[in-house]
Image (cartoon, rainbow, N blue to C red; front, side, top):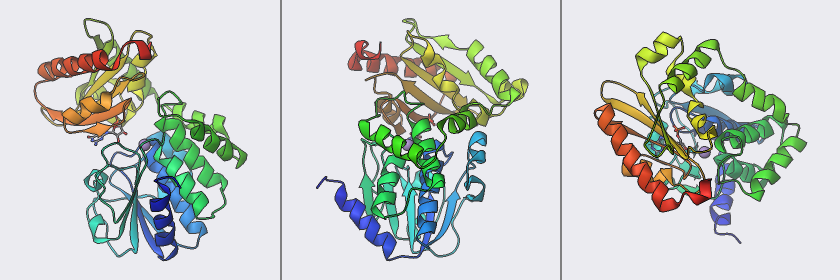
Length: 329
Ligand code: 5GP
Ligand code: MN
């Protein structure tokens, strides 16, 4: 028996004995949030359960084309009663951005290091490349057939959460699951086109503006990108349009890490980071009160932008020194 089989069985039992479920995930949902949530929603519906999905923020535009995404309710708090709330892909209950979840029996399914264990049942597996790998296991354990809708959402989550199969969290299990998804009828070309080739012109122009202003650290290993409301407006794009931009500097061989500052309000910035190989950017995010994974992490900080950039470069340089140049090159 693996250490994880116990919470999995507890979740199966908890689902079987309950009827009305609320599903949620982290605010500003990504492909793994949406994919995990909707794979779960379709699986519960197949068991004859009542399901309502609620998130604080809408899905990124390209994900709206996938089945069921338009049915997710966007609300700052949950009304009504549910037998259980299943929270997926979310390290802490507050990160849902949805109030009122603590009133319910909470099932916490997640792969983020540092998950706070906020549920009545907590199933945590940091070795999962996407939370949807865990949802896949749960769907199997519930005896629900892998329909094309469920498989599409699981594949979508894995594709996006591994950065198109770039991150070090990928395992043989990842490909076993993807294989099963394809056998269930997923068209990987169509999923990739929907996710990555659904840009509008404003987004492309904004990418151009942000990348033109990109800076490098003195060693040339760290890319620093920045966007504010004015730049977005001038390019005819929005902040949501910058989704995925952070991965582009990493396509340069010498660049080992990227830090992306997005001005929120005044001197508050959302910081997203990405890295290659063993460089643990998650540890850097944690120092600033955020979190995430080794190769993809984020936090929110306040201060002057010049000082913040210097501070993050210094921390990332330390991470590169500590975790090694060799592994990423
Ligand atoms: P992104 O850069 O795409 O916003 O986030 C990358 C990863 O870091 C995601 O897995 C996300 O859940 C995590 N992350 C981003 N921002 C935060 C944050 O403020 N706190 C925590 N705990 N995790 C974050
Ligand atoms: Mn994830």
